[in-house]
Image 1 (cartoon, rainbow, N blue to C red):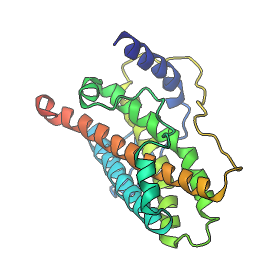
Image 2 (cartoon, rainbow, N blue to C red):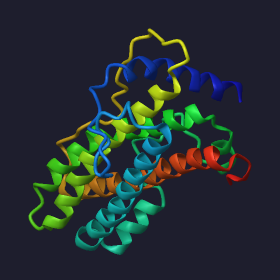
Image 3 (cartoon, one colour):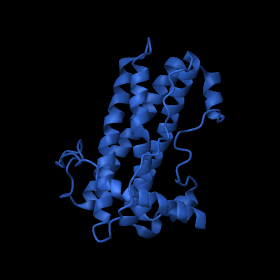
Image 4 (cartoon, rainbow, N blue to C red):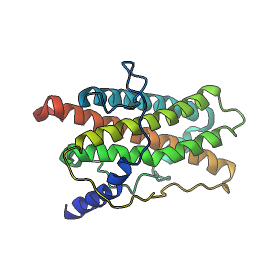
Length: 231
């Protein structure tokens, strides 16, 4: 337990200064399509919009994964992937997966966890767009969904950053330098099958992490409205 708390503290030191260096988020208008420049919006309303973004991202990630499976992954390879033959790029992040551990996270750490996941996937999704463009028979719908998710992920990052700033207004700021973790490695030497399976792993892992983002944000919302009944 002590080790987990220490890991979380170290990640907080790395992330906090980065919150204040991120470019200004999008424009906060009444429509829910944008999370831009949101400091003036209430925390409750901003959280609702961030949750809406996360819901859409997860839904489209499910659709993208299903499309990719239908087009490129025969059933035996799906089973091989499900049996753990390929590791997710966010496996090493200090983010709990069990229900009991998640319930113990503070509100601040729920947001930190979402931000960690979001930032870990920005570069891999750009890579995924590049590789899918080289597929001979990739449907436009798959390409468009992947591009849409990549763009919405950046918007989600901006919204989460503003939420974290709002929570930190009455706290001291940290000065430790932020450094990129470089968890994703681009490999151009893969053969066709390996490349397809890597792309499939990226899609399936992102779908799982998108669900985590949505779950964490909804738990945060629940705590603000019904603190003692959030399972």
